[in-house]
Length: 65
Image 1 (cartoon, rainbow, N blue to C red):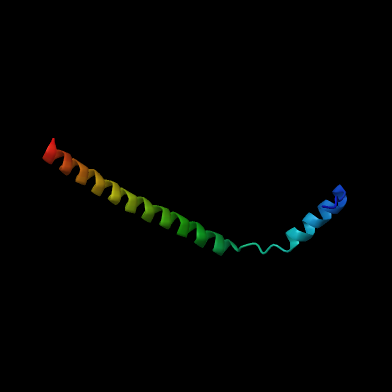
Image 2 (cartoon, helix red, strand yellow; image 1 turned 120 degrees about the vertical axis):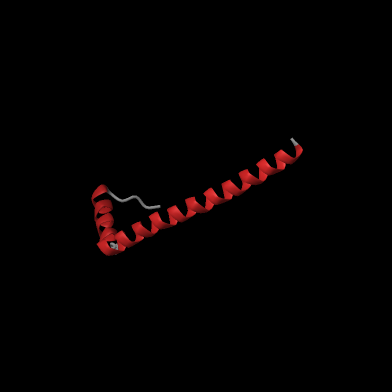
């Protein structure tokens, strides 16, 4: 791999950064809200699974214990 001097490196970084398409504020807000919604749904789902497993094990242990 060819080495570049620091000035060329900085120029290349600036050129690549100029190609980046940054999200709009609306896109950022919508995706952030969606992440929070999905995190909440996931936590509710796993709470329900945990509750079902705990209840099932308690019932099973109550029969034999």
